[in-house]
Length: 311
Image (cartoon, rainbow, N blue to C red; front, side, top):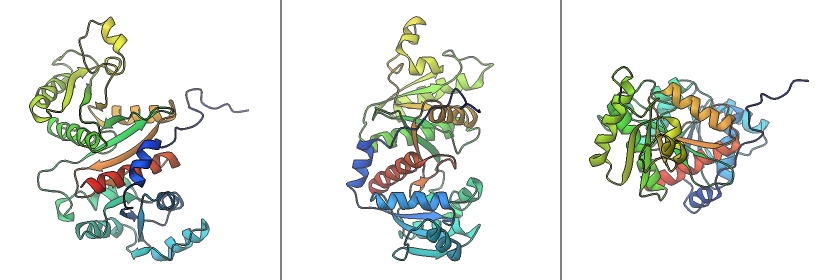
């Protein structure tokens, strides 16, 4: 008998009820699903539509979309279908978003790199010149509505200081859209001391200093080790003075490796629900991991509806 890996949670938390209710109180946005012919993404947009979180626009190979819809027993005759197979689908979604025909874009059965190549370049017309994009996860545990916003764990591989500043600003904006106007953010590093031999510690101090003027409604501290971000008791044990320790709303990762590992450990090991958005474009982009379950897809759709309404 093969036993489950001992660090895996038995199940994932549901999408927070408060977040879902907030999104359902808004008109369902037009959501472009890019390469909609895959079973998982089509089922995801179906769930969002049935919950009032999306009015789908299905982009991809028309025959494949219709066949997959038949396979899952979903009548899509009332929805708009755009024939744009393979690599052309993301570009078509960008066209629709640029023209105001859709309010958000969702990743379907398509490689993330191909998907983003159709949306992020200036030629796609969705990003103001000089704007840096960032991905933000909204992570919650079962029994708690309070999220931790983790950035960037999915888009920027080895971000510069300026890119991390933008990611932090995106996370603060998302928190504010959701009603938190006095957020606390910890900048993740292996230690709380700026050490030249560990460049991200020095950069974290630079970002924290920048945030004092650039993000006046946020309390930002860094560098901070993970225990200091999560635990007030750890801060007391280390004589570390902090208003953020044990009360962080946002965690800013130094790179995608550490951020992605944290996100997956919180989902797989703690059973958290993690919805995710790419921010910095004219419309929110729903970008989730292929292995994520229904609660994460619903959470992402809810976030997309709320941010689209605020844009």
